[in-house]
Image 1 (cartoon, helix red, strand yellow):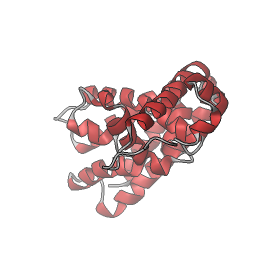
Image 2: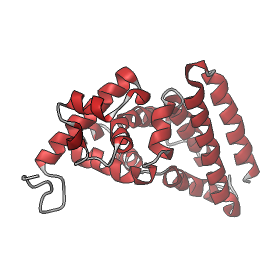
Image 3: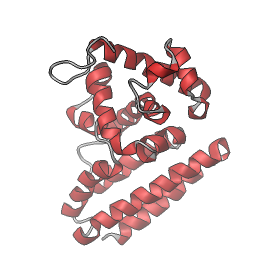
Image 4: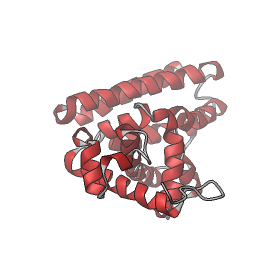
Length: 225
């Protein structure tokens, strides 16, 4: 491309930001109207007003772009969390609330959240979130507390959960030697429940699904003492 794509400081150029936003907003629109399964490079490029080849100058592939187009769904989770958490909660209550708020959103949009946290490009989710919020859509952080902002740009489930897991160890809810294993088991179970929601779609009894996850969640935490 003839125009400089990055600034001297290493950030994205205005031109690059503008074209990335076109593609991301096109992806968002198509997710809302056709779902993740209805996405294609051709459809997104047409919606954005560019040809398919141009897209590959800005995103690795369809899954990478889908990740960017899905980030807006995290805001609903963070907003729900900010109104549900209270300073009086202990670490165990916070951990329960984090998962309850997450599942309320994720089980309604399982394909989006499975791709985001467990999909092909989930290992670079942190980089995607940083670019999305700090380079492309900084206005979406307005009205969000500093603690919530940090959570919004944290990529992996392990990173998100480990902070609270350490607090539960300090407060005596989890044994130090069982903390990492418990966290990894909860994440593995959670991944499976989100995937089941992807497979079963609208036929899934959402309340029963959430209740079954909560039962296993509480079992694992009880075994971690």
